[in-house]
Length: 135
Image (tube, rainbow, N blue to C red; front, side, top):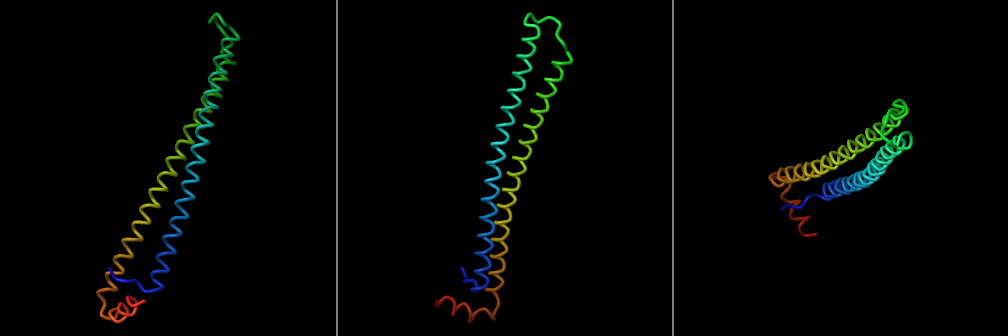
């Protein structure tokens, strides 16, 4: 493999560092969103239990109950479940962003390899290769 010039190597290292920082940030966001998703799911489950407990408290025998009150509580539980699903969507988006970061990193490497092959093929770079290889 040919040696990149000092500015090229520094640019490539800076790019890889930037990609690593972005990937770390995405991972932190994924972990945060996963925690939010779990908390929201627990909230939805708690709201559903509250709806069931309210139905039992209003009429433990299973007869006719105040449908409006139960409907309102169930609506709240459904909203909490919707929020949980939305958090799942955000986590999926974060995973997609992570995959995009991987693709970006691979594209940068491929680009650098292609650029390096072009530099190696250039007759102008032959003296530079000998100089850089001696360092």
